[in-house]
Amino acid sequence: MWSLEVASRIVDMVFYSSAPVNEAIVKKQKERFHDGIIVPKDKLAEYLTEADCILIGPGMVRSRIRGIKAVKFLKDLGAFAPRELMGKGETGLLVNYLLKKYPDKKWVIDGGALQVMDKNLLNSQMIVTPHHQEYKLLFGDEPADKMAKKYHCTIVLKGKEDVICDASQCVINQTGNEGMTKGGTGDVLAGLIAALYCKNEAFLAASCGTYLNGLAGDKLYERVGRYFNASDLVRGLPKVMKEVLE
Image 1: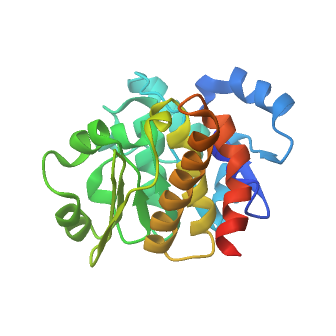
Image 2: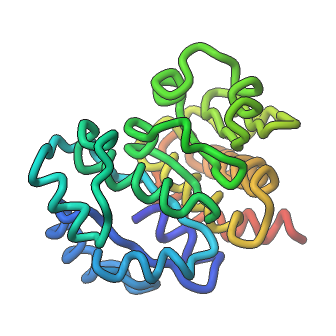
């Protein structure tokens, strides 16, 4: 929801889809989310084809379906079931299938998707937004600049100071504060980067989004200290963006 809400303030239209295991959540979101479109899984391919940018991962969990259930899941998507994906559970099947099927789309990969993705599918169209534990799971102890160059992707390594790298450059972002360690602030960042990536190149969207997200957090910190949450961040970002642009 945080990703959707921040993106809906920037782009013309956002849409949301979830795995079948989350159908109850999807139904609940229809009651709550009025600024975009809820997409059923049988229409997902149609919408993905038209999307300017795809964000995958916020709220995803690593499920454990196997065998026949896994094959059925992909058939329901109208997809084939490659053998190498069978051991990754439902989330892994969905993430790696979509990344492999749509390699030329602009992707922002976050949260649960980072925990199950095949890093060999990364390319120059993809932005990954891991915190330090997710980064280590994906890349081990290798530095971000080296991994961005090796996999030709853009990396946003979130931390006390954020490190943003693509294959040719890196910047350090120092906006943000202790209040942004709360759950959901990373989802806000992912939605913001995805929205900016719709009409900008990857490194600019990643570095600008990270800076703005942290700056909005700093403005909140000036007013209420660390006592703010992700929803406050979503509400504060439009004002911060307006001030920066002016």
